[in-house]
Every structure is written in structure tokens, then in C-alpha cells.
Length: 479
Image (cartoon, rainbow, N blue to C red; front, side):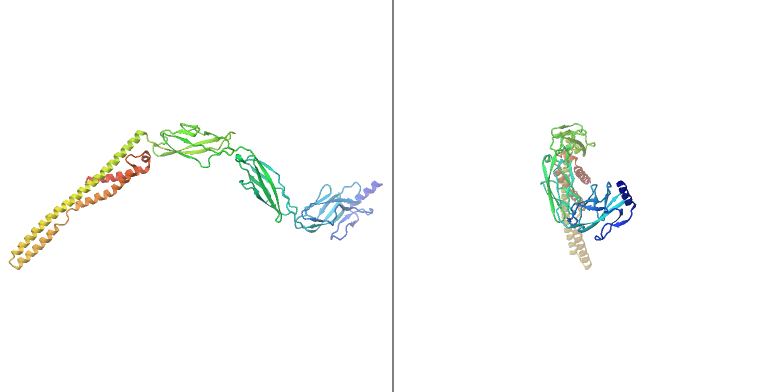
């Protein structure tokens, strides 16, 4: 008989008969559910919390929920409506954390069901007060290898649900500053030097909700990690000459302070690694055309005690062509002869100019003497003509003759050395160009020119210019 009564109750509940009002209208809402009219006491939702209690923003609220007068053996399920982010777990505990903006009275509805039938519902009021509590921040010690990046999410929580900002306020001196993004992700690139190994680095992190600041101090232990050698930041350059021996430096760096050894990626002819670096006996004719220079790229690697290798490092070797001793002596002898010839040509120009000037002066003196004699003779002849004049006509003719002879005598004083003077000007112009060039060439290169000067393009240009002027001087002196 009892079994039939329970079955009848469940059947009636599922059939949805005779709905009644289960809750009063005090909360501004109603909850309707079907129950068996033969049941004296209808099912109801019970709470294990005092609803007059006040909670704070950010509190973790837990309210136990149960169903009174439930049918024997039936398991009720509960649901909530009208409240954000509230859940009812498997143990029938309502969990909810109010956030900013939820201050005051918060209303929501609880319902209890068996199967598809709702047996009871209840409206609940929760009072939430505004609160200001500092963020909660805890950071444990960290460990990371040298040269690696330490990255983790700071687990800061604000009890009031406020948004948080992060910063590093203090740190061990001399280290790079970590970064913390808006989500609280901490990133720090650890040092790679050997001195960093085993050394604790301390950081102080601050978290703010805009009003309060919480801090946490934690240490980071850096463990050893081998870092491969590194090529020099600035590539070295070396200058050498053919036939000489040069040492090419190989100076890599190692962050762990390991001893380094070196090897050539490809040996140069007559090259070898020694204690000083890479020694290269530069072969003759390394520079193809025998003049100028050539850049040879020497590539090498550094290897540490852990057999870690550097990248390929490169050193530029500028090789300058070098004259063999016999050729150098021949070039220097040719230079000396050329300079001697140039000086002799200059002296010849000076001598020729002096001779021309002497001839001009002698000619002028001779012409002057002849002109004086001619003038005196003409004047005397004119005077005799005047003295013997017997009439006016003859007197006039004598005066005219005297005047003509007088001016003709002066005309004989006019220069008769125009050609010589023209030659003198040409010699003067040539000397004005030639003499300074010889003086400059002699000062710049001396009596015995150096090998470096012979190879320089400026020497060749200066010599060609002087040779051109010397040729012009020679042509002038052959006229």
C-alpha cells in the first residue's frame, strides 16, 4: 500500500496536476509547480545560510541547498536563474563571487526538479556591500639556466575583482629590467656570463588595484649553461706585402670564460695556426698583376673546452704587391736618372734664357751707338746745307732735310730685337712651369724613391706630368 502511495505521488507530480503558489509575493516574483493535492505538506527548498547576512564584493559565497518533503528515494536537481556566474555543484552547494557593480540586494531564483517535473522553487535575496581589499600576491623562488628566458604568469588575485597592474620596483643591480604585460606575464632574459652562475637575483614585484598595492619579493637562481664562443663584434683587418710573414689575430670571446682553440676553415698557402694566431708567409705574385693590392678573406672558427664551435669568423687581409730587390733597384736608378735629366734640362733653360738676354742687351747697346752716330752725321749734313743756302727756297729745303734726318736718326733708336725678346718670353714661361714641378717632385720623392712611392698612382701621375713639361722644354731649345 505504501509503495502504491509513493508511485501515485510521483505520477501525480509528473502529470502536472493542480498547480499552486509555493512562494509569497514579497520578492516580486512567483514560483509555480505541480504537486499532489493529497499531500498535506508540499516540497520546499531549504538553505543553510542566513539570508540577512551581508557579503562583500569579492567574497566567495557558498550556500547549501536541499529539498524538504521530497518523495522518498527521489533525488532532486537544483538550478538557478537571474544571477550571473552562479553555479550549483554536485554537492548541491550554490557558489557565487560578486564583483564590482553588484553592490546592494541581488535577487535570483532557485528551482528543484525530479526528472522533468519542477517540485519547488524559491526566490533568494543576497545582500552585497562594497569593499576595498588589497590584491593577494605570492611568488615562489625560481630557477633558470644562464642565457635562457625566465617566463611565468604572476598569480595575483584581487578579492574585490578589480583589474590589476604590474611593475618591478626593485631588482639586483646591473641586470636587465624584466617586463610584465597586462596579464601578469613576467619575462626576463638571464645573463650568460660565467659570473652569473650560482648567483641569486632578487626582484620585487608590485601589484596595484588602483588603490592598494601588494608586493612580493622572490629570488631567481641561475644555473650553468655552456654558451658557444662568439666571433669578434668588429671584424679584424690585416695588411701584408708579398714575400712577408704576417700574423692574423683570432680573438673570439666566450661568455663562460672557457679556454679557446682555433682552426682555419680553409688553410691559406704557407699558412698555419700557432700560439700567436694564424701565421701566413705571403707568397710572391699573390697580387695577380704585380702592382696594386688584393684582399684575401681568411675564415676561421673558435672551439671551447666543451667542443662548442663559433660561427665562421672572417678576417680581411690586404696584400700589397712587392718588387723584387733587382727590380726595385732598377726602378730607383731610373728615377735618379730621370730626376738628374730634369734638373739638367732646367739648368739648360736657365742658361739659354741668360744667353738670349745677353744678346738683347748687346744688340741694344750697338744699335744705340749706331743711332747716335747716324743722328750726328745727319744733323751735321743738314746744318751745312742750311749754311750754304742762297735763297729762301734752298733755305726751306735745308730745313726740311734737317728735320727729316733728325727724325730718321731717332727712328734708328727703335728696338731691333723683337724676335729675341719673343724667345725670351717663351723661355720665361717654360721655366715658370717647369722649375716648380722639379722642386716639388724632388721634395716628395727624394733622390732615392721608395718602393711604396713607386707603386702609388700619384708618383706615376707626377712623373708623367714632369716628363711632358721636359719634352716641351726640349722642343723649345731645339728652335
